[in-house]
Image 1 (cartoon, rainbow, N blue to C red):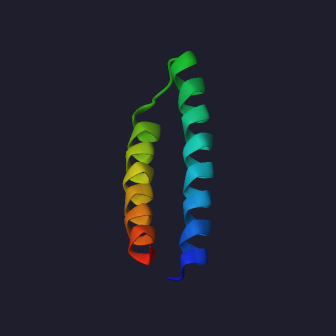
Image 2 (cartoon, rainbow, N blue to C red; image 1 turned 60 degrees about the horizontal axis):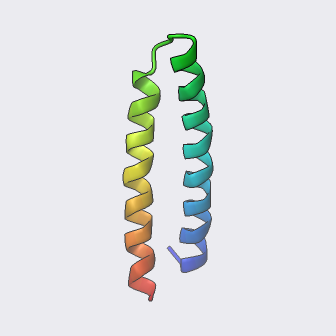
Amino acid sequence: MTEKELLHKLDELKSDYVRIQSDLDKLVYVRGRASSAQEQLVRIEEEIAEVRKQLEAFE
């Protein structure tokens, strides 16, 4: 991937993270099943870390 593609991917992941975090807040408020959202957040955090690691290689 190019640096531009990685930056785009990072923006998408951050956007997904914020959206899921908002969904999680709503689930917790209504006492819904939040474990799936929590798992998605962990997965996205790992992807963000990997993309950042790849971006560091460009510097």
